[in-house]
Length: 81
Image (tube, rainbow, N blue to C red; front, side):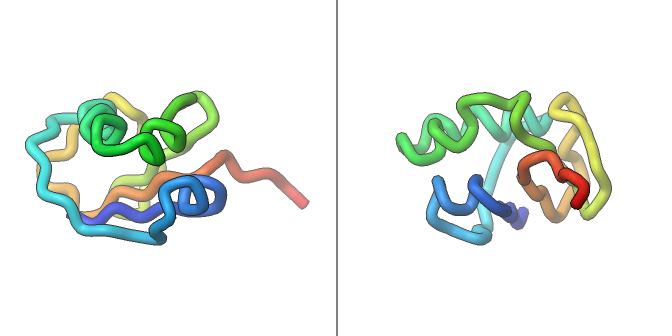
């Protein structure tokens, strides 16, 4: 699946996107796999309350299943302006 990172998440990880093979059942499981990779991932996913996630371009929750999902995007909450 493709994983996209936006704003400060991209800055901390150092990549705008990557393709990963995962056995994760939910977004939360995927986050745990990513955190375990390297310190930069652990830093980016340290506070999930500061993150939002979209599955196949639809806003979702961290307990959402990943079955059939092709794209996961992580980004900070949007603010008006």
